[in-house]
Length: 115
Image (tube, helix red, strand yellow):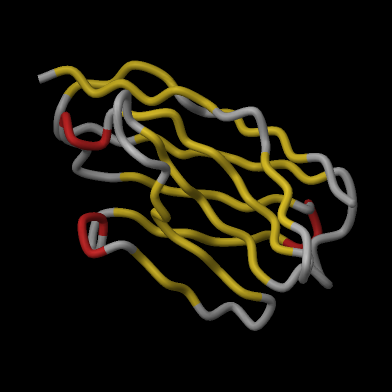
């Protein structure tokens, strides 16, 4: 079991950057995969980026080259660096921890990109 808390969301102009953080309540060393998802109004939640325990990353096509996911095992924190933001990136962003048969979610942080 793990509790997750996201932070770093906010209002940003198109072309700007934000860095999201996801702080875990326990060590993330043994967590199989940590990921960032987002959900825009009226749309399904979608995977944005994921990183496994070996450091291998995976990105949605829409964010490749703009977003970077990373993890700091010493701080039990996963980050999402978001650059060149556009209005399509406006959504609630959620952190996810995959612990095998169970997945855990944070409460989310809102990102709003103004054009």
